[in-house]
Image (cartoon, rainbow, N blue to C red):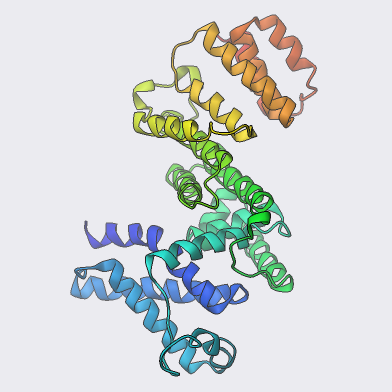
Length: 376
């Protein structure tokens, strides 16, 4: 892999790890310092690798540079020497030896702890998503602004207020206690769900960026499935849902970037590997008696990976929508249900149900109603 391809790839995979570990070292209230050091590490790599070539072990090179930059910062900065270095070296064999733990286990633990800190219930959901993109995914302000279809100034203010709120609330990077995991995990899953939706349903023109957002949301969710404390049915159901949706990503737009309706999609473009992974996680989600919205939406997503246009298929989808609306009502879910109703039962019944929703001001209402009336 050439330098111009390798470095962006490593940035996507290693920036978050370095930032999480250093964020744990400096404290969440100083997360910007951790981000600066991680960014400087990759900047130095782009300069040196361009001259000397890619090192034999690029990841180890990045970790070594990040560690050295952190040690230099701690040694020269009086504030951190007094407030942080003492804690870091407390268990070290030598008083002046500062340990920056970049072991695989600490990297994983730090990322999970960062995820729970960023998805703190005290923050507005849009701030949680913005921080997740910025801190855990390495997205810059311009990229986040594009993903949210808003201005850089808005994103800067949003992230600044979020960090200040975390400081004021003295939120720390720590894995929740056993009794707290379920309610805290619910907030994390909601953030990851909305993060994925930002990429999948965004009207932005940058398809590559939108796909990257989806991939990052899937990666973060997969991390939760790999930890015994968070490997729970709703987590697996959410990852299954993401896999099913992502499997159709390439078929959702034409070469001109225009949206392709579901019934017109070329199923040869659907990713069979992702569909299989979705089935795997959906099976893992089926243990126990817990039924979440993610289970139902994943089941709906599964049936959408079956191209056959049969009443039986749409009846299954309709029944899952019925359960979803009972569990957690959503106008959009109710609107989508009317399409399944038209396919499973009759257009007349679907139009009647759609008109009762009173969503005439929603552009999706008219699009879907047009599809019901004039569809095949």
